[in-house]
Amino acid sequence: MIVDVCEQVTDAELVARYRRNPDLFTAVHDRYYRDIYLYVAGRLDTQIAEDITAETFLLAFDRRDRFDPERGSLRPWLFGIATNLIARHRRKEARHYRALARLAPEPVMEGHENRVVASVEAQRMQPHLAKALAALSGGERDALLLVALGQLSYHEVAQALGVSTGTVGSRLSRARTKIHAFIDKETVNG
Image (tube, rainbow, N blue to C red; front, top):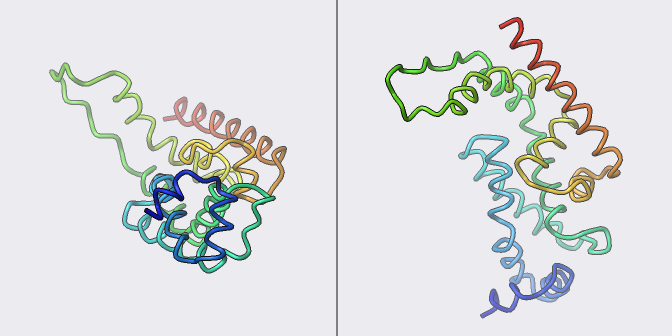
């Protein structure tokens, strides 16, 4: 019954309610767990994603009194916490992308009509994309993956990272330019 009531309220109303009754913070978890988990799982492997997602909500609960609804909604605030936790794993993330880049795509087995051309091309491009992502700055990679995997708007990315919307646009523009240049160079040379 508590969760049903909380599903129908805005984030600001939910914050006001959980400040009076911390047990209602479970509604925040129920409302946003899937979004945060999918974002983190897209950035890191699924085992780490479970841990990072759980830690995101633990930190959010511990810091629930610091949340200011006038600065934005809960969703970008939670994405910001998750992104900061991912930053702790940045070295591991970069090693992961470098390892993916070293993997050669599996050869396409001839005679399999069910192989789609797009799938083959995506497999061929995976190492190049991984190298390109590893070459981005942390801020560029965070902005790009928050949009691509978290499906956040520029405004939400700005809230999550604590930067201006213009900075998000600049980071995304630089990231796109670098990725296109890197992939073009790699596919010509590779």
